[in-house]
Length: 402
Image (tube, rainbow, N blue to C red; front, side, top):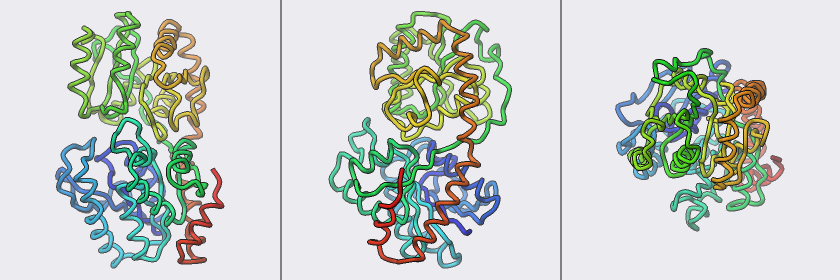
């Protein structure tokens, strides 16, 4: 197959949605011809072959940070992505388009699918439909809801990464669409050895809690800092991997609580070192208000860590309370603290849960995810070959099951 991926973010720009797109693209490029259309910024080349994938970047000019997109850069990607994609269509024939994020990428994928008369598989990542931490979350605004509803109905197949994402789609936008669920996945970590505690200044008897992600309001890391204070154990350290607009606020919060020695900001960490730090740690913690899926939970599981997080989001598809760690009712911070304290005090329980997680995570490696996408692409091509009408595409999606 000749596959065109469309995604406004692609590594090194963006977060988990771009990362999973890159992993799928690289896996499929072993057997298919794969092109990715994404946004350019921060001096990245317009066109390059990366791990067997042709990456074409549409200039957006307004991007200021690798980790976080701003509104101007997202809006600019719509016309520039369509313009760059149209040029690609004139010199290439693609069999299928896979569009990631209904906004802002959805209009680009939809336009190119119409221009090229090819099927469009629309992949939802959760936050593009519903983000309770943002006043601009699309589910709160009638015009954005209407636009998203229109794009969902025009796609040949809609893919959600979790039951939660598909439930939010039906709840806020298109109750008539079943959608298809393909869980996200990770590569099996190639790094097998932990980082040196001595190198990072930790003792062997320190209890290392770790969290990974962009430092944005949705992650609610202030609650993790409060939890460390409540635990009142100087051996407990919280390692925060990632950067973002809330970093200074969080540093000030740690200083205010006199926890500078226990709250460790590691900033952006290279991929291999991220896994070394995870393997060095004792447990993974997250107070994120919502995750469309939660790739970082899989990464933690692959490194043998128990996971403590809230029960709101796509992670509930694969995390199990009292098995993989603990799932706590959203924002029940007292219970969250209790569960963390329980694991902090019980090293054998941490190891028992971590060992189970290493076995459980194997079904979420990237080769299985890519194989499912390959099947969906073939199905979308078959659906599209039967009709060019949007009405039939809606009927076809109604027949999908979660």
